[in-house]
Length: 108
Length: 115
Image 1 (cartoon, helix red, strand yellow):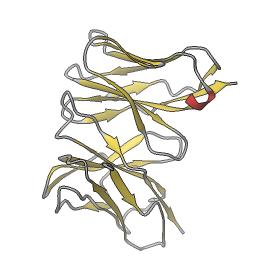
Image 2 (cartoon, each protein chain N blue to C red):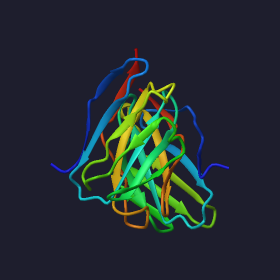
Image 3 (cartoon, one colour):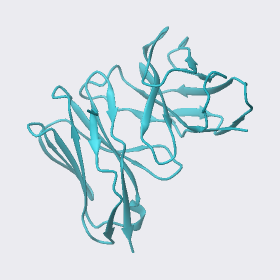
Image 4 (cartoon, rainbow over the protein chains, first blue to last red):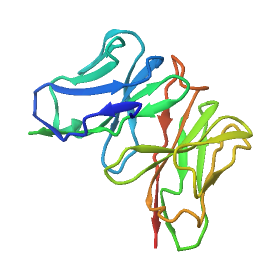
């Protein structure tokens, strides 16, 4: 079983819609959770991190954490073509564990 | 500006040749990491170091070597024993361990191609 699992997609949404990206993790002791965006041929860049159960909002992005269900999600509101990328989920305790990423395409 | 600098951005290696990828950070981070990413694939951990003069193998360490003589520097050598080294290599750093409050940041990456 992988430490962090994501649906590889591809996920396609129309411009202006909400994109929902999901991630599950296996280590109940994980303390920190991260979402990274990676454009093709570029390195991952941090979008958000979340440590506590509930929602955390930053502009068009909302991260949601449910430790009981071991589930992390990222919502992107008013999706733009520039949001088209691969989104990596990560969980951390003593080490960082990355999912394989979900490819998102926002269709103009 | 604070950040992680990788060089070179593009590197070509001949069969049987060792090459070294440089990684320098000025974020005062204790931990540094090397990942490999193949096209369309996720990140795979090669080596990591939580403290100077100490480093640990990751999931795919065979054919690679590292050193950590300075806190700021964590070079990766791709040896001739690595039979399929063509990939995108990412260096990263964080404060010590992945505990709450720490975040991992990435350099811009190095593309290695075998010719």
